[in-house]
Length: 140
Length: 140
DNA sequence: GGATTAGATTATAATCATTCTAAATTCGCA
DNA sequence: TGCGAATTTAGAATGATTATAATCTAATCC
Image (cartoon, rainbow over all chains, first blue to last red; front, side):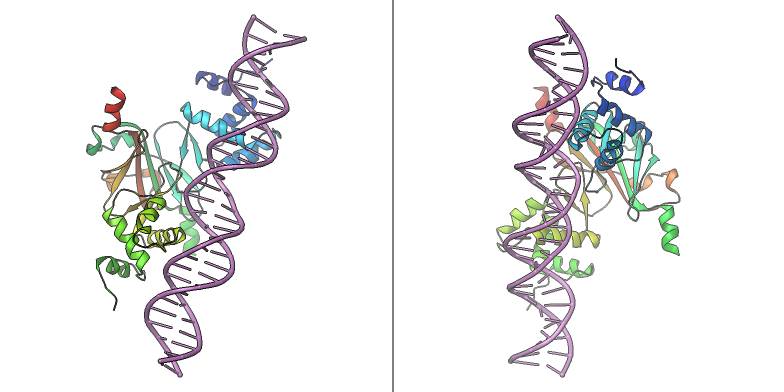
């Protein structure tokens, strides 16, 4: 008897066979929208699923990316971070604390005349700087 | 007698002591604005400077980045690519041929209301898609 | 000029995120 | 229940980048 929950349904809707690791990883991603790394996902889920392998985390995330459930962020870190795709938004990275913050941005307003012959499938906006908490810290 | 050329002067202006590897790497970056990888730079310069070490290429590029002469691009490749900083522009990556193309975009026109408390030091725009040449190829 | 020193370069080893591989396990379905 | 395919697993392999330690360079000081 398999328990079909909302997460499993979401996987099925994206043509991904549900499995315990896949459901747990999707659940983690949705409930912790904090752009986690593979290591963070692995460490967190290891407690509830001790047999989990890091390779499975990689495999699952790549499966999700192919199914367009997820997108990888490469904000200059060594480790890739992952973002559950929702609406268009940009990513801000604090160079002091390393935190990543979403911000609303109307990406479609970006008109790139140079690219009118190009087929564009994804638009990413990355800002770098210092977040308010770190600005206060450095002012002291 | 040291030959001071425009490249050495540019280094000095950025508080970087000129040296043969540094001048050659800067020259390469300016004359080949094609977002090269470390390997491409290394292989190309090895012919004129056979003693060049790959570690020197890494060190030099990181020195340039700190001096804000250069910026690293992380368009989801394993290898980092590098871009001589000029004016604001976005980067398009063709997911078919892997080529990277600059495009003009007025990034400063972008207002991110969510970030008005943030200090923003860099803005990057990355688009993904298919370039015209590859569109034609796949249509055949 | 010759010694000193700091910084730059080199070669190699180490690191570490990610992928590969092959074996074990699980799941769906008859 | 049992077969076959897909999934998961553990560990090895890969490969870009960084760290280390030795060597070299070039300017400075006496």
